[in-house]
Amino acid sequence: MHIDTQFHPKISILLPVFNGRRYIRECINSILNQSFTNFELLISNDCSTDDSHNIIQEFSDPRIIYLSNQKNQGLFKNLNLILKLANAPIIRFICQDDILFSDCLENEILFFENHPEIDISFCKSHIIDRNGMTLSQGALKDLPDVIDSHLSMQLFYYYGCIPGNLSTVCIRRKCIDEIGLFNESLYVSGDYEMWVRICQTKKLGVIHKHLLKVRSHDKQLSRTSESGVRVISENREIRSKILTILPKNVHFQAKFYCQMRQNVLDVHHSLYCLKYKKINNFLRILKIMGLGDFSFGLFFWLITLNNHLYKPQPKFV
Image (cartoon, rainbow, N blue to C red):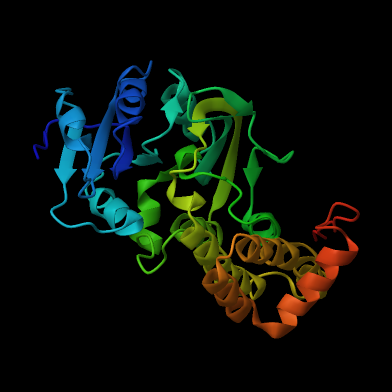
């Protein structure tokens, strides 16, 4: 690892890698080919068992700082390793499967310069499949450019991790000094928990431009059977903490929405596990939800046909 102490980047790009052989070269090229060039790229290879290391070593750009872990750390501990080394005032995250458009950094830097009041942002993205074919434009609600904590906490409660993907997010470096690093005890929802912590006291910016391609494929961490159970467990814990922050006059409606929507989604995943004979995962979800929430969720799943006949609408105040 070599760090040029004379280099003063305006943005640090953090790229955690684990067995990223198939897409990592395309990802790195999309970063190095940015129209905005004053950046550093910090790559941490989390003990990959494929040839990710050799592919990364092909690149000799002086803006790259490369770490290779001797032991697998997990996503959020791996992110924290390079987060501590980030030198720039703005930090951007990117996943190994994803591709930045050439004007991505330019637009993000400009947005932060035009909105000094925000400390975290996310942008729109194209969703692509394993072969690079576009699946959708990415789900993004009709949101204002700048969202205060009062609204963002409600959005995070109702819709979960609203940026959708780690690769859409930028934060100011000072946030890390104030609120800390990613929670390493979380397996899949560490980003969701981190954004909630930041947005409790900071304003959230929304860049209404498609600045990257986010890849969706069956080898991703979030798509495994184990991850599905972890998502339910971790997200329920995060939502319960958000509920304590929400205005008192929205608590009843918020909990009702969760019964009618989130519990239905969780029950649906448990039934998927049951269908494919993943009995242990089904029982784990039942234990996580508890008999009461599971029963309510199953009831609403049946009478609304998995929210197809009726989908509850959240109440904002």
